[in-house]
Length: 298
Image (cartoon, rainbow, N blue to C red; front, side, top):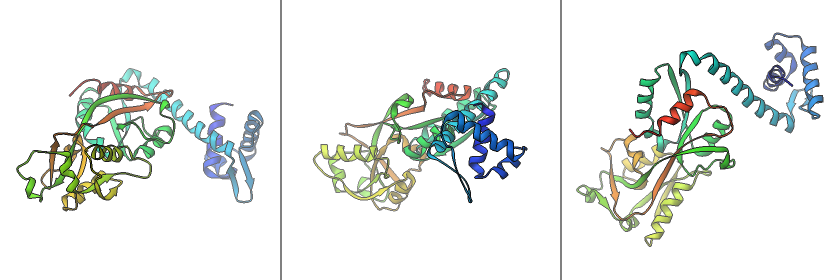
């Protein structure tokens, strides 16, 4: 089996029929059908269920489709990398980030652009589960996220560069005038607040950290809303609905005119952050250089 056959297979899988796939590949239908048959014979499995409504992938076909997409992406990336050696670092750097880590990117990208002006950027936002999927599909090169990374697959497949830990702070509406002149707050004071927490069906780590710290100080937080988005929580706080506890770096992405940040004077927990990439896959030169840039403080 070669790269050419994999391209044939993927085209048929995407089109769902040989006729359209053959036209896209600029070839006749019988040779394309013959190549598919040869692949199945070589692998000893059935890749497609052939019916009146077209070609449908079998379980074996679905697995080969995933692997073939990854292989072809790596192959194309390798060709671009080889061609670009003489030109230095260039191309598109695709970064995935959770919203709470977006604030770590602007200064880093600014400095990286000074070194490698030919690099352009694509930034994808989402939760751990979604970003993990995109990384496995090779739709992104790396992820900046809170740790531990709560992806669907086994964490051992990721390489991780830990970044400095981030202290938690309390975030309250600026209209709560009782705290206008304060810069700090104690954990037990949070027991009186209506609480908003960051939680999705698949990512719960930060929510659990906050709840456990509250319990350590002798109270259950009065959670009135669980949100899947940092931006939603900040909007609700700005509207006076309640308060939250967030990593401090999050606040640099939001205006502090409508919310107030208070350092927690007796908290004993922090948010760990890291850069992640797939361990056993090809990593472009630009992605390698960008990851290396995180080893230098700014």
